[in-house]
Length: 291
Image (tube, rainbow, N blue to C red; front, side):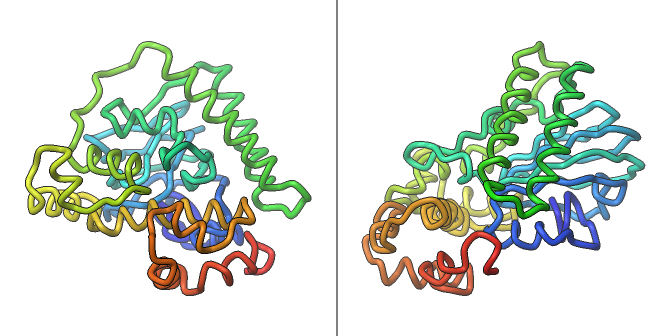
């Protein structure tokens, strides 16, 4: 969604978003303006999840169909979902986060309502006035946390993110405002990859599990997301590796094995290709302070 600072193409990055894009800051939050909530017409696909709350105005978005976002709406974009904006005079709050920050067993991200959007649920929620007020308050506090340098910032930001996700769960428990869009093949592929990426996994295995040919799966995923199936498998594994490097003191060879690599040298080579540094060097730099 963001180019530099927030969803769909801000031109001037906030300092924290640069680190978020690098994977050193697992959560980003901030204000969104018309240029971010409305797009330049290009399709965006990203590896992180986005929650956008519109507080005023109106924005037209293409995401699993043509959508119109109005004041009070919440737009959910799971990792890998292609979307494109249009005319907009909207403003609001946005939160972006890497799925690995939420943890999860066997590599399954706990994306809650965002995962259900991946499964075909409608990507726009319409909270009550009280729910909007709570979401606005928590997003504002979250933006303050991620842009500051207070001790315990990451823990506080994660706690606030969980409050946002809990509120979204409450909203999705309400009757849906409209019929959900159909579930695309690329969404099924990404969900399968997120569930099985720490196991031995290939394009052929993914295609077989979904009952499609490898060529068909490869073509659809590349066309809809701009990435190959192999690149999505790699991203899921690197996300889990970053989480372990950031949050544990496990040795690099242990992390390599945990994220699906029997050969630690191959893991280090892949990590360096994605991040520009070895896992050990990435860990030494810390989350933000040493970047």
